[in-house]
Amino acid sequence: MDKIETMKRFIAVAQTGSFTQASNQLGVPKSAISTSVSRLEEHLQTRLLRRSTRQVSLTEAGERYLSHSQRLIDELEGLENQFQRESNELSGVIKVDMPSRFFSTVLAPNLHEWFELHPKTQLRLVGADYRIDLIKERIDCVIRGGVLEDSNLVARHLGSIEMVNCVSPSYVEKHGLPTQLDELHKHFVVDYSPDQSIAASGFEYVKNSKTYFVSTQSLISVSTTDAYLSACLSGLGIIQLPKWGVQEQIAKGELIEVLSDYVCKPMTMSVLYESRHQQPRRIREFIDWISSLFERMSHNKKETNL
Image (cartoon, rainbow, N blue to C red; front, side, top):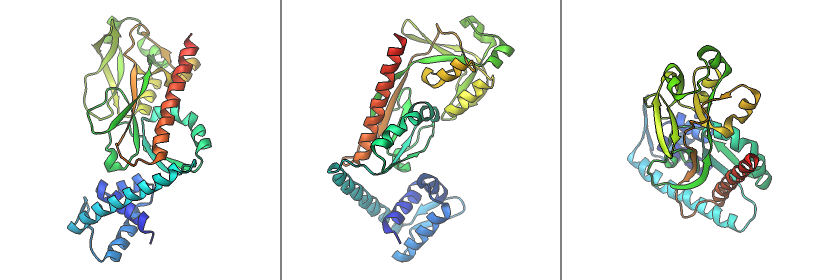
């Protein structure tokens, strides 16, 4: 029995309260997670978890074991970090979460650079568009756009992305091309609600440094950035999203830029991570790399517009 791996699997089950979620988090079959925990209990000769059809909870012994095992794993990561400081070669898994469109348009096309520098690292992408608990999910860092909620996480500003309003040719064919704000009452927007909350449908724009909101109709509400773009491409409404992510579709005529004088404010992008005294070097350097990538892309964009 690999005691360290078994310990990590137990911690994942304890933190998520679910064998299924632990399986998704670690990328390991659910049956393997269950077998590991059962063998651990047999080895310790005590029950660590209470299992039911609805939930998994810790026994008193499980709570004690969780506390000690978490401390041990943190110490091991600190030891690994100490030796990695003495070596130029990074290794290990980096677990990161970001909006799916950010990954496909910004990170994925440039990841070869990171792996050329650090071929022994592995990236595990969660890809959730909603707010998640870094500590509970054991995620190293997340990338988010927009205004950040107060939290105990460290936030590092990456920069801002220019926004654009778009519709598809099929939308124009059915509803016409919106050219003025007073026409929006007869148009539709695609609602984006990553936390699945119900919000008023509307079109946002900035004028004289003030943000205004025009109420509009909506046919569909989505919770992921991929679905947001897909809904627009399918002719279901106007969307407002980073220009970086749709330049190719605009160039091909798959999307049409509209109301260019009424654009919402640029989207602020940030990377968030848990403040840990002995954060592994691979995490620090990955965050530095993302920051430098964003800065380089922003600089290239400015030069293109000159």
